Length: 249
Image (cartoon, rainbow, N blue to C red):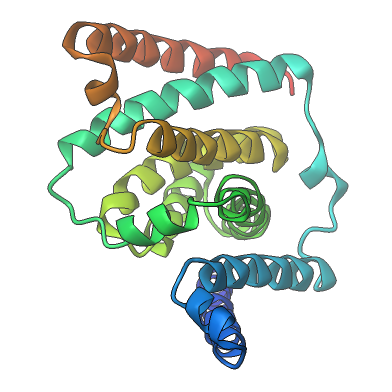
């Protein structure tokens, strides 16, 4: 537990240091670069730098040296993982809408970051890969050594949720963390989690760009279709988890 918290704090510290350094670098440039400092680029570059440095640290320290962590699993397992992931995203969106009273402290920041291709890359691809390396490849691995699987997955999901530091994201991140932790426990591979995490973040980016005024899927689909899709998602999530549970990876 202690090592898990230290690693998360280290990652947050790297993000803060990278943000300060990159912002200072932009600020020392010409007038045009100083104008850019007020936009999204310093934040995006800082996120990418922190991700790369953290990944390098984890690899250099040997946290991710076990070959099984990079096992792609079977195509059939990944197929049901994708179904479970998409279903979980829809269910999580419904839960998020119920908890819509929670403030979204980072909404403006995410809108700015997602306004260009580098920001989309950082949020949809690079971030999920690094977070799975850290939260599943390292933290969940360590917790599974110290606790029974159920407790380890819940603790891992809790740390993952709190890590987001945004009330509007914490609950959904915790619920997604339960699925990601269970997939990791089932396979001891980071690949299924990376697939689901990229799906989740990519869907979030896509819908925020395609439907900027929609708060959730209900605003896009309408009442009748929304509840049909939600009901199907609940059934598919339960069935896919059942399939994954009995399936060889």
